[in-house]
Length: 299
Image (cartoon, rainbow, N blue to C red; front, side, top):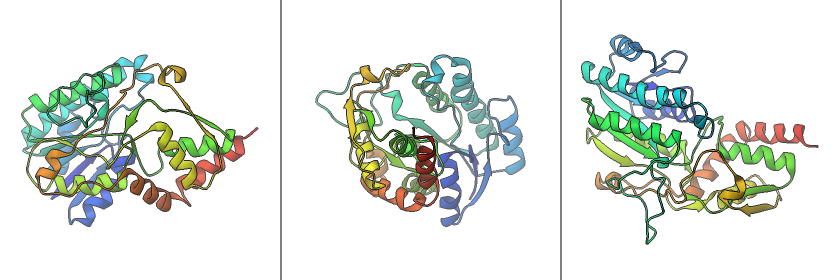
C-alpha cells in the first residue's frame, strides 16, 4: 500500500517510515513544513498528488501547557486540521489512521482502578485534551473509513520527550524532583510504529488503544531512566500540586488494548522493555547528546 505519513518530522513519524517499509508498504513522508493540515485545501492537494491508500496522521499540537495560552493554535492543529484531513480522505477514498492521546481521560480515576477501555466515555480537562477530543469527534463523525488510535506517554527518536529531558536535567542538576501521583504507560515509538503498520493492513476500522504493557508513575519512569543511563542521581517524589503545571494532567490514564488483542495481535512489550530498547538505540545519539547538553549547562 501507499501510505502518506503526515507529521513525518516528529517522533512517531520518523519511526513510522521504516516500520511501513519493513512491511512492504510505500511510505510517502511529509513534514509539517511540507503539509500544514491547518491550511484549507492543503490535505486535498496532497492526497490528489500522492494518491495514498491510507493516511497516518501523526501531526498535531502537543505543547500541553502552552495550549492554555495558545488555544487557537491547539484547535487549529488538533481539530480543524483533522476535519480537513477527514474530508479529504473521504473524497479520495483513502483510509485514515489518526493518533490521539490518553489525555482525553482526564476525569477522576476509575474505582476500582482499571485500564480505560476503548468504549469508556472520555472526559478531557484543559485546552490540549479538549482539542484532541474534538479531533477524535471529527474522525468518529466523519465520512472517512478510519482507525482512531490512542496512545500515551510517547517518546522516540530525537525528541523532545521525557526521557531526554530527564537525562539532561539529571546531568545538569545532579538531582531530580518528579511527580509520583500520575499513573500511565510510557510507550516507545519503536514498538508503536510497527503495530500501526500492521493495523492499517487490517481494514478493521474503529477505536484502538495502543500502549506499552504495565504501568508506572512519572517518578518511577524517571528512576528507571537514570538507572538505565548509569547515573547515580537521587529522584525525589513530588505531587502534581507541588509541580504546579499550568494545564491539568490525568491522574490515571492507563489504557486497555482489548480491541487490538481482539484482532489476534500480541500486546506491545512492557514499558521497561521499550525503555531498554530506546536507550540501546539512542545511547550514542539523542541520549548521549542530552547528557552532554546537561553536563555543559551544569553550574
